Each structure stands twice: as structure tokens, then as C-alpha cells.
Amino acid sequence: MNCWFTEMQTPDMAISCRVKKTLHEEKTPFQHLAVYETDQFGRMLALDDVIQTTIMDEFVYHEMITHVGLNTHPNPRRVLVIGGGDGGSIREILKHPSVELATLVEIDERVIAAAREYLPEISCALGDPRVRVIVDDGIKHVKENRDTYDMIIVDSTDPVGPAEGLFGRAFYQDVHDALTGDGLFVAQTESPFFNRDLIPRIIQNVRSIFPVTRLFLACVPTYPGGLWTFTMGSKKYDPLEANLEQLPDLKTRYYTPAVHRAAFVLPPFVEELLQSEEG
Amino acid sequence: MNCWFTEMQTPDMAISCRVKKTLHEEKTPFQHLAVYETDQFGRMLALDDVIQTTIMDEFVYHEMITHVGLNTHPNPRRVLVIGGGDGGSIREILKHPSVELATLVEIDERVIAAAREYLPEISCALGDPRVRVIVDDGIKHVKENRDTYDMIIVDSTDPVGPAEGLFGRAFYQDVHDALTGDGLFVAQTESPFFNRDLIPRIIQNVRSIFPVTRLFLACVPTYPGGLWTFTMGSKKYDPLEANLEQLPDLKTRYYTPAVHRAAFVLPPFVEELLQSEEG
Image 1 (cartoon, chains in turn orange, red):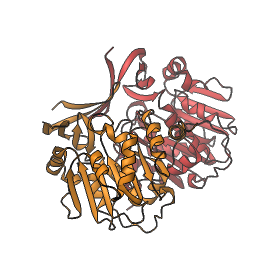
Image 2: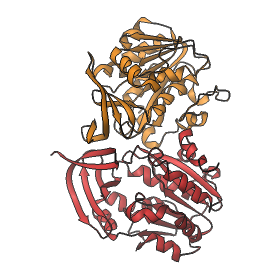
Image 3: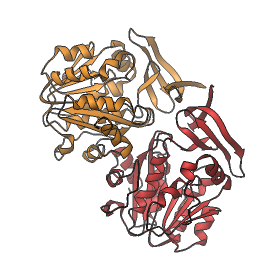
Image 4: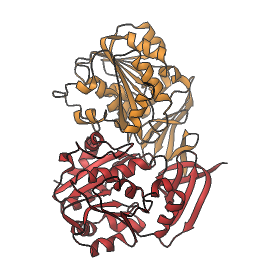
């Protein structure tokens, strides 16, 4: 079979992978949703023809968007995931015994349904009694829930379409207000190679609201360029000073305490994204 | 213009980039050589339709294949690059004042010529008086030059075609013998996602010859999956114990002493490549 999925990662660059079978395809009220069985990456979820997650490399993204923040906060009890309908972030959050309630607010219920059906390795924790699944707009949810969460994870698509509002200053202010007094948030914030205008704006916005703002890196092969940024805004705790000595066994394939620390070591070409708006 | 270059990164995965102009194309005695002007990556060198280097991201690869080793050795005077006909590794090596002679042994003189003509930002140091350019087989060169180099850099193409012999035990033994008594080598050793059979074999071979064997990581967007491994074999010095306090200003965009140390922090899915052959 010579069927290929191609994602235009930028107007001038594409990634393609051979498709064994199209497992599911539909137009939801929000986006085009597809699940493919691929030869290279295993099952793969694409939204509007952009790869969201694959069985091969989802562990990198889901471990890094969750554990870095969860291990920075000494006692995260209530955790919110905005987006992340595949359930991968929820699965990782539940590895932390301190967590009493993990809330998923996904705008597109069809993403959740597709993940439950076709990506059980990723969505497996969505039925856990500690999980609350809400189909709603994350922007609305943080506006309506003040002083509620110890940690918020912004597990969004790219800043076009339904997720555009998740990258603006007003949203970060609402995230701040939805957090408890010592809360923190982590958001996926795109590529340091291909989003060099966006990242300084995000950093500037987060810095204007949170006393602690940090950028960290991980390498996700199916995302443009591999290297990926995550931004943390924190009211109190600094991920560089986190006590990582006595952690539960997280059974991770990418995250470790040493990887936590190394992820904040930025090459100069990334560091300059943080400094460009300071002058 | 809607002309695209596509590299089959594996039989089931491809990367494509829009080509503004084909600057050069030829069949050399060793391989197909092309230089493209691309919209995304700037000028790009491809050998047998595999991306070797691009103006956009070459700094990551060339800084990491050179400075980690050069800063591990306290006084590298004579340095050999095998392959690397684009000259990027030579450019970085010459930033170290201790280096008296940098020797490039490239099997395909047409690669050097194309780099000199089309990639001056990368090849710019090849005319330096401290540089000796030899067109020859690197395997032969290390056999014929014993106890000669303080550091050897294996800046090769993938382990198919002309570079296949640069990944075998016999070659690593010759590299060992071409090094001085406290010498070390660094080789590019492919992707921890897509070359999971190859890397443990390399590590096993290097460990059987060198007292210090270390794997480190960097993220090169135009290589498959982004995340890339480099292997160091060293007779004496350990990169984890290198004194990185008083370095010359290397004017780097990726490498720093902190990045040096962080590059050796391996996620568990990479660490297991090192352990798989120990049992």
C-alpha cells in the first residue's frame, strides 16, 4: 500500500508517513479529525491534518508537559488539563499520589471519543474515579473557576483555529486567577526554530503576570524540527529549585529528575528568545 | 514555484522542503551530490538525496560534534576530521587556540568543492593555514597514521554506501591506534528513535576498545526525528569530569558548558540502548 499522510509543518516544509490504514475520519464541529495506522509511528491522531500524538513518541510530550510542573509543586492536589482530549496528560498526572482530582476540559468531545476507541494506551486513565471530564471551552472554564487548581496544563493544538485564544495575555491572566495561591501552569509553546516570533511574546505575557517564568525543552520527533518548548508560569515555586529527591516511581521513558534539570539548560539560540523583549 | 525536495528518512517516513532553486547537481564517483536553495532551511547540501547540512541548523551539529570533545581534552593540538567535507567541523575546531593542525580527510573531493562554492558560511575555514585537506579514504588514513591525533571526529554520512565502514569495530580500533596516548574520538551515531539496533552495537564496540565510552544528545531539526546521538570513546579523559571553567569564547549558538553537561543526561529510553548489551 502506498498511501501517505502529509502534514504541512510550515508552508515550506512537510513531514510524511506511510499509512497502513485510515482507522477513523470525521469532520467535527471544530476540526477535521483522523486516526491513522502508520508504519513508522503506530497509531496516530491528526487534527486539521496536523499530527497531535502517535503511539511511538507520545511519551516524550506527555511526560514533559506534566511531570516537570507536578514535581515543582510540593503537593499538587487539583490539576486541570485544557485540551489534551487524547488523555495522555491525564494518564501521567494520575501517577502522582498527591493528586485528588484531575479535570480535563476539552472543547471537542469527538477527540475524546476517538482516543477512547483507537488510542487506549493513551486514553486509558480517562475512566479513573479521580478524573472529571468536561466538554467545554477551556477559556470559559478558567474564567469561571477562580482559585481552584494547583496546576494547570495547557495541552493545546497550534495557535491557529480553536486554540488561538490559548496563547494570549488575557488567557494567561485567567489561568493565573484560576490557580490557587501557590499554583503554576505549563503550556506547550511550539518550536524554537520555527516559532521565533511567537515564543518571545508568550514569555513577555507570562512574565508580566507570574513571578516565576521558565522555558524548557524536549524533543518530540513528530513535531516540526523535533525540538519543542514548554513554558511554565508559577506563583511561588521555581522548577530549578524543586526538591526531586523523593519522588514516586513514575515509570517514565523520558522524564527523570536529571532530565527535569537538563531541560532548562537552554542553548544560546533559545536563550535569546527570552531576552529579545527585555531591552 | 512548487518544486520540492523529499528525503526518505526511513522507508516509511519522509521530510520535504520547498526548493527555490537547484544550485548544483552532479554524480560524483561516490554519490549523488546536490545543493538546493530552500525556503525553509536556506542553502542545503544533500548526498544521495539525504540532507547533510543546511544553513539554518548546521550550527547544532557542528558545534556539538566538535566542542564537547575538544573541551574534554585539556590540550588538543592535532585534530582529524573524517568526512565532514562541508568544512563545518573544521570551522568550529579552529576556534580553539590550542589547535595547531586540523586535518580533513574527505573521500569525495566534489563535496569539498561544492561546499567551497555554495556554502561559504560553513566551509569558510578550509583555507586557514592551520588546515590540511586530504582527499582520501578515512579508513585508510587512520590505518596509516598511528599515534598521531589528539582528537578524531567522525563526521560521516549514514551507515550505508561510502560511510558503512565507519561504524564497525575494526574502524574504531584503527581510530584508537591513530590517537595519541590520551586521545579521544567523537562520532555522529544516528537517531535514538530510528536506529535502535545500530546504537547498542556501536556502544558495545567502542566499550570493548576505549576505557571511557559516552553517548550524548543534540537536536538537529533536519535529521530524522530531530534528536541525534553522538558517541565518544576516550583513552583517558571523561567528558563528565571536564574542566569547563576557563574556555575561550567559542561564539556558539548551541554549545555552552551547561549544554555540554546536559547533553549527557539521557532519558531512560536512550539509556536503555547503552544497557541492552551488558546483560
